[in-house]
Image (cartoon, rainbow, N blue to C red):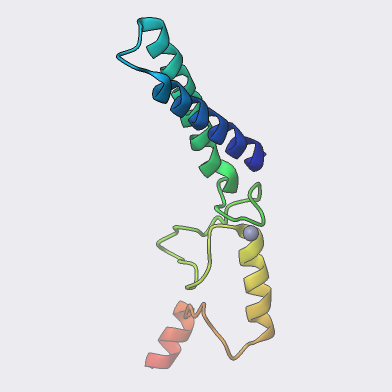
Length: 117
Ligand SMILES: [Zn+2]
């Protein structure tokens, strides 16, 4: 799908370039409209290219779910975590295998009380 959009963009830009290069003077209304149409096609194709990664912004899981904790100020994600829930789950599992690495250190309120007592 991304490749098709890229081809469409390239074709539209080439066509627009050919049309503009062939002009010897200011085009007629019809000629100008034709040029605008082709440039609009190029713009539409170019806009759809950026949407390829989807809401997760993940190249592996473009249609995946966004981590509900993403952007949560109360319980922020550890550094290195992205928006993709699938990738974050994989990171969480990897972190669980290495208990000495604790990127998500959140002290329970009860622990804090015990420590200060
Ligand atoms: Zn992912």
